[in-house]
Image (cartoon, rainbow, N blue to C red; front, side):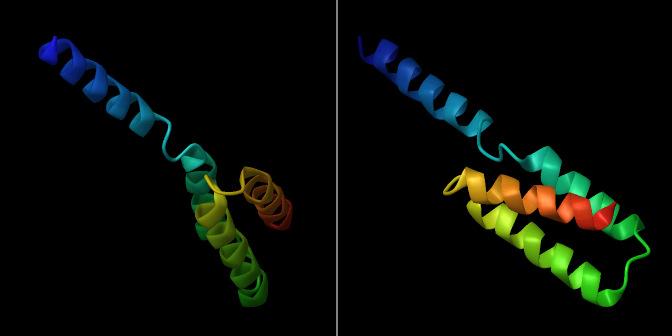
Length: 77
């Protein structure tokens, strides 16, 4: 019984860590586009600020994170 409970707890822990960083690919995309862009320093600073908002809120306030991501992508395009 103890072994079963231990396996269940470990499984729950591992599965919860899989979903951490749900916007990981979006953040990597922002980083790549920011490095490749020919934007002014002011625009790059704005995109960096929006990226930081995405990172800070990806789990707390996903709506704000996604809005910030969309705004950053629109600035980069």
